[in-house]
Length: 125
Image (tube, rainbow, N blue to C red; front, side, top):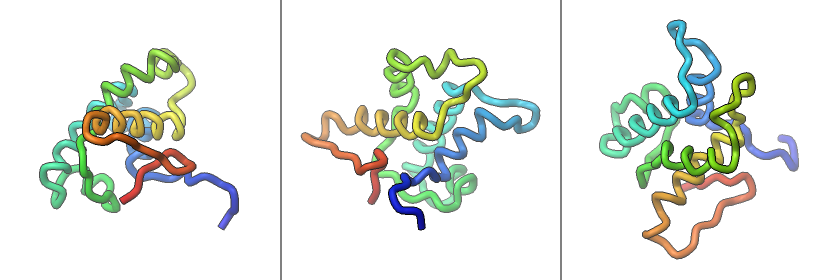
């Protein structure tokens, strides 16, 4: 175990990055397409976790307690970070994590008074 190193592994984030950076059936997705697809898979998994397409693609995925408006998060994030206009530099793991965190904030903002993240900006059960 390395001390002082942030966790840089998450199967769902890695799936999004795979869709963007690795050609599958001679096709890669844009970040917007990948997040839209992920949002749809999360919505399906939210309604029926057992046997969802997301649970087949990421067998270690847990339960979702809210939906995640990832495309809305991307719209907001893109105003500050030009992640969608970069042609040769794909989004980083950290940027994908920030998008998921922002989506969580958008979903929870009318339901709670305070939301905190741990050191590497992730939420856990």
